[in-house]
Amino acid sequence: MTTTTDTALAAEIARLGDLLRGRRTTVLTGAGISTASGIPAYRGAGAPARANPMTVQRFLGDEAARRRYWVGGHLGWRAFSSAAPNAGHRALAEMERQGTVAGIITQNVDGLHLRAGSTRVIEVHGTMRRVGCLRCGQVFDRGSVASQIEQRNPWVTRPENIELNPDGDVSPASSDDFIIPTCTVCDGMLKPDVVFFGEYVPRERFRSAESLLRSGDALIVAGSSLVVNSGVRLVERARRRGIPLAIINHEPTRADRWADMTLAADTSMVLPALQELLA
Image 1 (cartoon, rainbow, N blue to C red):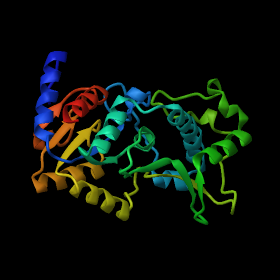
Image 2 (image 1 turned 60 degrees about the horizontal axis):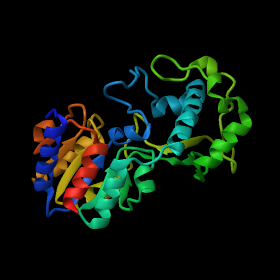
Image 3 (image 1 turned 120 degrees about the vertical axis):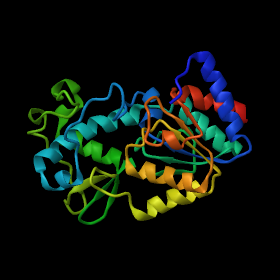
């Protein structure tokens, strides 16, 4: 992966502009595009080492683990809801308006692309904005579930009451008394509309992502290490079509060997500069 100084980065962005000029580009984004908005990346330098991530099997079958998830998830949702789109999100929205970006496939669940003004967005891993009942199928806005959580657990609004483990997970002591939110229609189990570890991306959603990929004639990967298979599968489809592939990510990725260009740089710097070049 190319490392850059400020001067070299400008030259690399110019080369990226030459690669993409005259093309409609699909963009695949990951957690790295949201770090400038204050949302920490799950992987990469500085991310906590999570030895035991929440799986869908644990969520469904282990009430103690489910309580810890909801405590941590509530804190995470509050952080997401207060975060604002950064320059990288805004640049992609502007590139869509000017016709140089065909759309965005994002692995993020924070909703920042939509809040930045992008309209053609496929959220392959779901969204934190919605919560569904696993019994009756009712769908709730996350804000209404957050209100229920805080009414039942007023102490959760004070972060000093919640102890975190070294890996960033909520300690059992901070969740033992937590009352889990339930469906207000049937009292069934609620689950955020996100793809957990151990779950597959819904088939129709992945097909929509493939369709959006086919509508472009180049692909940018922005802020993703491509550890998750859904991202790799999309890059593989782009590779089979032989379209240009550029990767903007601080860390090496699983697809660097296939890329026409790699930039080890901040997406919030590269994408606005690219937008100006392609305007």
